[in-house]
Length: 274
Image 1 (cartoon, helix red, strand yellow):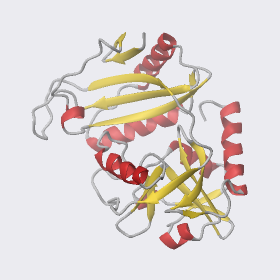
Image 2 (cartoon, rainbow, N blue to C red):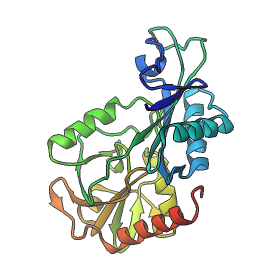
Image 3 (tube, rainbow, N blue to C red):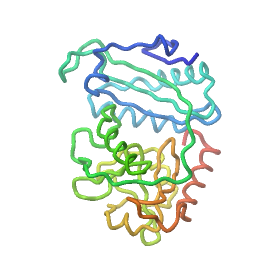
Image 4 (tube, one colour):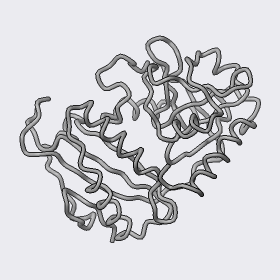
């Protein structure tokens, strides 16, 4: 039976509970990280835990100690026989009143695992009509307040797309609902800077560090004339974009996309905690 780690205890998923007054449920007061496992070992743990700490600090929460999280992940992987799959760490403000103010009962920490269905070889994206607020209080934080993403992704699915893309208030490309975007313009890969309001994706950072991409504002015109483009995320890795709003891109995957995918695959093979 699947096991989940809740506040220090490894329990059957059918017995795992949190309070109905938990702020992660009532007001989305929480942060999370999803890690991919390869051969039973999570990838880029240090980076994910550092980002969890950054997101927690941005909400005024205290991130659990790295050693606690590493132990919890190891126990969940061992108990569930996770091979190639996903681990999710969720930390919330814990039980609190029905309003926005936090209670004093302590935070909630959950670590769970899941199998991963393979992503399509390419995907279609749709630009949604709602902007991402790059100046908002939680811009760039990986919080559990995902209702905006749920609505956007549903809108994209209704139009036959596998991912939704947000523009920001400046009208530039920001990010997907669970991914960063890279666009090939003028022979080089460009991804929106963090100032555009996007999440500091772990895969995004690894692609940038490979030296094949730069950060710069990406306009709608850049997206429309791109020779190739791809989404980057922990579970998608590097996924080519086949078309944008029903307009096919010239290459999917293109040579820059293939190079980025190969570089990431080589890194996974050589260093599971880069």
